[in-house]
Length: 435
Image (cartoon, rainbow, N blue to C red; front, side, top):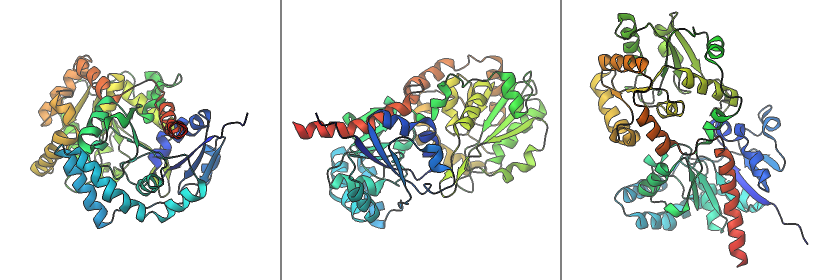
């Protein structure tokens, strides 16, 4: 009997967070265990130590960079497709992609077509479909009948039209699946719930440190309350991050917040430390942030860095965040979390934007269902922090609902499931071609 030919998977990896979420958690190894050989197209292929760190049996790295910028026509198609989906015209949105979006994307994908022709993959995979680096690869593969799979990297990605339309989408949870069907018009029967690979390290046997171990590593006193303040990042000028943090510190100094907590200022990878320097030169504030970085691919935290972030969430008495992923991530550890929706320095402009984009869109599912307390001013923030420190069970039922509805499977095996989904798409195509 002739041995079966291994499944050949072609994927792109253009962002450091993809390397962190997938490669650090063994995605390439899981692909090999599922009978695949993998070609990885990435601009990191020639970076010192990269191949050696992530090499696995049957994996070949190719140095190349795909573009994600959309032409004016492609951007218009994406925008119109999003509007059609939002109006419930899902079939029309799908037809628009098939008749216009896909041909436009494939037509401009010269490098992608060459890679597909040369490597002859059985399946094509893009690990962060919302960002668009795999747009041309997906479109070009679909035009020649190769199965395609896209991973939806975050729970909030459906709030913008996807740049490409793979045959199969993998996502965090049933809630994300519903949003992809409603907001992006993707057929629900072609959506697979796998969980969030980036959370897999939290469920490893060696994940948890004691409170004393964590405090020794980051310079905290284990006998004092710990408040974790996780920033969002300043993606627009009036989205200043310092005003809310300064208001929190004022509440601590004035005694509005009780028990003299120590604070870990946990910076989003894109937050800028110099903006906070006037506020952090004090004994009760410790700064923490990811340091892993890949040139040209932005932040790429190691598994050990993710372990530190998880232990901060696990041992914090309270987490405060104006809308970063840590706002929902803290629920994994049943840590009370508060979302401040105010900024004394930029006032109404900040609050209007926060209401229209964050509370009514980005975090709508949380706010509509009352899953997280929202503070509208310094006094409300102080009251919420005090209540959470006194009673860790405050909002516990809501955190349980958040975990069950939004975060998906939490068992440390999401990366493994994602690898299976990617390989199974090719195997399904093979079976169909034989019947």
